Length: 342
Length: 272
Image (cartoon, rainbow over all chains, first blue to last red; front, top):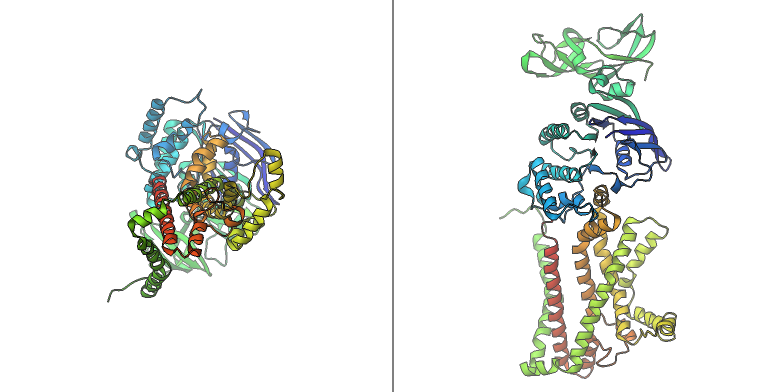
């Protein structure tokens, strides 16, 4: 199931929640919409689901224009942020809902619905919870019920709105790997909304980074890290530190910061560099001071370094002799530099 | 000494028990004791008068009808206040509580004037449909809806607000039509609140006196409510007889409310 959005615009009063969004999702792909809160990612998901109208633009799903097609006729499975389970129904009835409400002509008979519910409960690995009520479940269990309920209608497209936001960190990692595995096994086109870049980078085939109602870059995770299209993406992805620099003769200079110059292919003038912790190597001696250090396996050190009033995350190679309070300087092993000050 | 995390235990329990005893328990105890001055046979004779039975049936019947009639109206009012955005919503919201503030006698007189055979509503109703509302049991139901309605609105409102749009949207994405979403998702979620709102409205309506006596016409056997009969017996210095009717009302009302709370427990099964 492909999804094609063209110049989609949605305004709330004067503010544009979506400002000319283009997005093309391929068959069987898992796409993450990633952005800070208020960037329009949930609005875009709701537009695709048919829960929100548009002021301009065109949306096609599987090549079919969605203008005037209500949510209930789109056949899209949605897992809501807070799951939106029906609290007065048992888990089994929640999952059966999408089949129960079909018109008589297309509704499976009672036994077929029961079989399908049982199969879905097995699929999401909670067969023992069929007769429970949502209020009697843990967050992770509710999430599985919401997923099974959305899958019951055999959706052509699955939309997940911050599906792991309500889970604690430990459960979260397991659940998202499991969901990704399930999505691959079922081969169902999926769009995931998240503000957690680790989640987006780990799960998605491609990530659409959103900023103020626009998609600023739509690329594979590795490409986002290697070639961010704008300073916003460079700063948002990969926990990079944003540092002012001066470009002269094909080299970026960071003084007064004790960071060694970084070769760039930009014209002379002011610049803005984005350096990730793994790209900043600390070496003994210099005007920076090690404030914190955390040993990693294999002898590598994660450091927090203070330099000219700035606090930076850095790394030290195995065998480097550095302790808390020691003086050091930083050598960039890479980084992205954009022309112009910010 | 035991340590308590929440302070004020002694004070709050003391005040609560004193209040409950003075305002509720002692008067009710007196009500429960008083009728037996007549003896068991006397109480039975006093209560089995046709006029008493008719008034009890009328009071409980009209209260139940008024509660039932208020359910759909109250539900729609709550829905309008919670879900819709329109000019005057705040004013409507405020007006819902007016029956709490208005002396019920004033409401009774106003409703009587409105529904009397020559009133603004009474005259056309009689001319077009031949309906007589004022001075009949129908008039009693009208007055009782007036007092019961706010209870339904105010019990349903917070639950509806809490339900949010999520559940309705989820139903829509799963293929449910609007009526299906209302019937299978919204109404069942509101059912416990509707039952408890009905219970409150019903209880209030059973005991209502001020507004009813103006509109009812108060004909014995036809439109004479039980609370009025109690007043009549008091005026005849038949204190024990009045208390007997009061006790009968108390027990009947208690039975109804107990039944409703059991129904509500059934509806809330599984919910936190």
